[in-house]
Image (cartoon, rainbow, N blue to C red):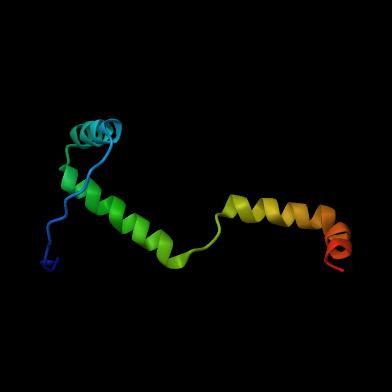
Length: 76
């Protein structure tokens, strides 16, 4: 893996979240930094694609099948 440049980031988190993060790192035998890197990469990837969740789309399709005539009346 190629070496990536790194920059320092300071932030403040609530005590419960930090305790949970520390516990997770300990249970997984990983550094907190590795978990933060993973979480940030996941968030960035999710936001980059901005697709609706599958469950939301399934509910929309079900609703549309059931109420399509009503939706057309409301739109007209």
